[in-house]
Image 1 (cartoon, one colour):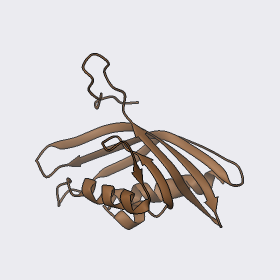
Image 2 (spheres, helix red, strand yellow):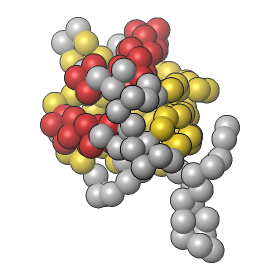
Image 3 (tube, one colour):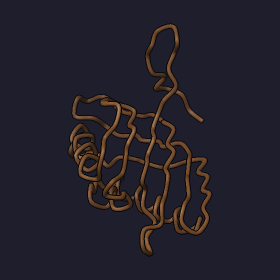
Length: 141
């Protein structure tokens, strides 16, 4: 079970590196709830996740192949429920000419639906500086 989820995460990372929205969202349940690192506070449903991902990929330079990986991944699962957590790392050139190179925390809640593991909740975050109120985007694990 844990190896199945790790394999699904690896495929999802590969899809993100290829800017493949369908492949990157294949693991999401239709009723998924997403708490992203950018507003709004939540996104509901797989269509919203696909829209958010398409918007994100739209900020990448058209000729750039993003680097994307999940590091320090931990997966725990029983027969029907599981969760995974780790750090996602993206490195790519943006349409603005800037480079995006950041890590963020991600926790995924998995549910076995039929014979397939699906993400039913995804929570991404970065720490923030209490004094400035700004996210700490440059941290590395």
